[in-house]
Structures are given as structure tokens and as C-alpha cells.
Image 1 (cartoon, rainbow, N blue to C red):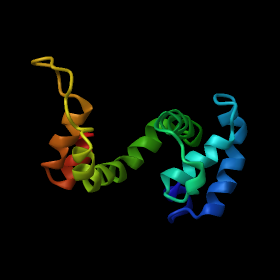
Image 2 (tube, rainbow, N blue to C red):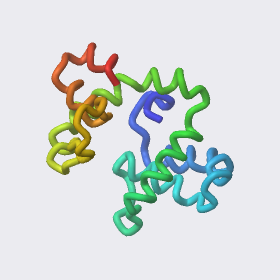
Image 3 (cartoon, one colour):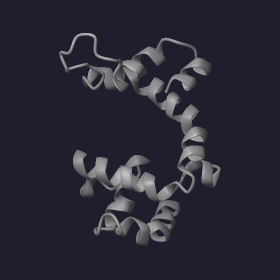
Image 4 (tube, rainbow, N blue to C red):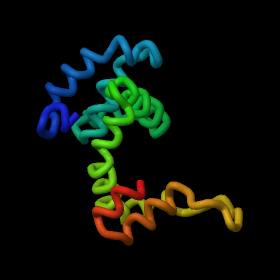
Length: 132
């Protein structure tokens, strides 16, 4: 959204974008109010009285991403540096929450996404964006 607008979206931008994408979102999740709620939450603009559960945020967030992307491969490639920077900025917080722990107990298991993120944090920014 920030790339589309050329700046951080404001509440009004999100309302407008959610209205535009409501029909596509509603084809997957009938409660179209979740689209605006998840976008406001993602940008830390959501009202506290309507907090989404983690499950609602996950499902509605992935659905929102799906309806926002017109060319997923190109769009995700363009977002890769921003995603890597977000992971880097939040790595300590995510680690403290236990999100980066491998709880599988399977020896020799291929690197999980959590391990890949942790590995990416130890290399420089240019290399990190190529690892994600």
C-alpha cells in the first residue's frame, strides 16, 4: 500500500482502498468489514475497541494480500527489501515471543522459515534480501 501511495497510508486511504477491494475480498471472506479492520491493524491505525483475534488477523491478512496483489511474483519481489527490513527491525521482539524457536524436535530437519530469518539477520542488508 505504501508503494502504491508513495507514502504511509492514512486511515482515509485505507477506507478508500478497502471499499475498492470489498467485492474481491468478499468472494473469499463474506464479512468484508474484516478487510478494513485487518488493514487498519496492520498499519497500527485500528481502533482498540475492534481488535482482531490472531486467527482473524492471519486469515484476513493473507486474503487481503491476495486481493491487493495484481501481479504476485513482481509485487512480492518489489516488497522483498521492505519485508527483510521489517524482519530485521522486529527480530528481537519476535525472538522474545518465542516465534523463532524450532519446536519440531526433528534432528536434521531442513531450515525452517524461522531459522532462515534468524540466519538472514546475521548477514548484511543486501545479502539478507536475497535469502528471504
